[in-house]
Image (cartoon, rainbow, N blue to C red; front, side, top):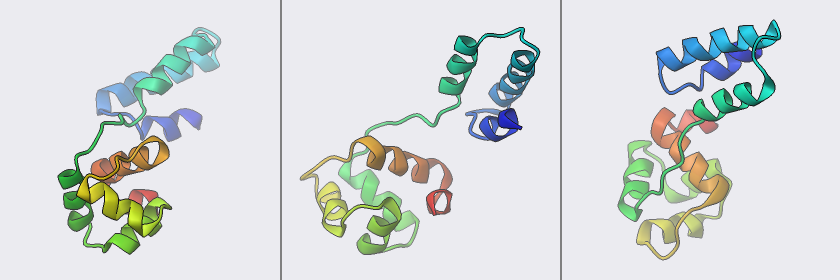
Length: 110
């Protein structure tokens, strides 16, 4: 079951299939933990920096206000405002969540 959960995160259907096959081999003892860790890393959503304009466009694409967007991201409203004006840059968990929203939509983090 773990493989099915993780392969949903895979960047492509091919990678998802390879991951599932490798997870099955791991269960049989034919693939070690370090190899599975490498596959886990491949299946993570990449984290890329976003410009102020991209953050605003992302929020507008989701049809939410700054306070609502901030609530979804679990940050203060003024953080979203500063990101959109370029006064600050999101990092860490906030940047990861923004990338998830960009890839999968706001409901992915709801």
